[in-house]
Image (cartoon, rainbow, N blue to C red; front, side):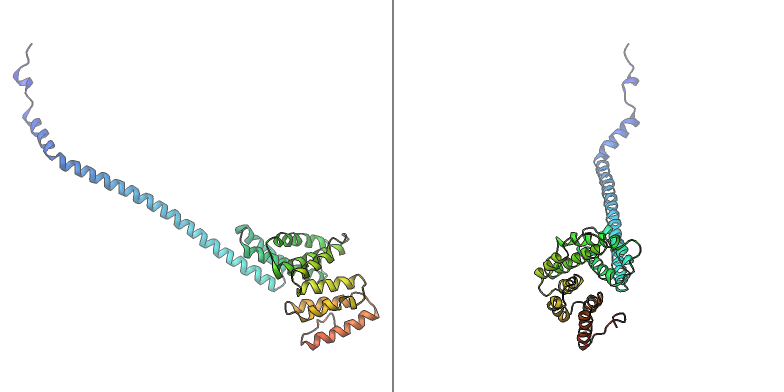
Length: 269
């Protein structure tokens, strides 16, 4: 059956609408492209803002950690000045956890260990554990630091490792490189205070005559590195064992120390 003319014809309204859309298509197309560009730009901006936010968070964390590290360094230094070695050690331990590769933190840890070792002997209040409980972790730090240190600083470490061995010897351990470490320190730095004064002390501890230690004590007396420690250790070496020779030596060296303008501690007096 043939369709009627009405069925074959496109309604005029539809035709007019289609023609209108076709005429306006370039403008619509441009508008759609612009809208897509805007959406894309917003997405890029959002991504950029997210990245920037992450960067800012990271920087804030770094700044916060830097403040924490600075506070820990200051706390450890302050406690060390006041001879509160356990607190200084604890503050530095936190610092080492935050910055395990920080050379300055490692150097501070070694400095705390050396000063603590110096006072372990001079202050006999070590508690019931004995020397080894305190000395062993300190010696471990110095041995680890030794591989990264040269010159006079290396000599300081070597001398204190020898001193740690001496303190362990007092606890009943065998003589494991006491004199050898002092000799190594002096080989690294011929004027090293610690190597000389500790070696002189060790010689007298072994009941050697006072003349065996005079050369070491003479160099130690001239050093400006740590005269208070040097004076105390010299006097301790001369008063640890009672003998006429050492008593005469104690009086002699006490006068020498006074002539330098330095004081003698009350215990020695």
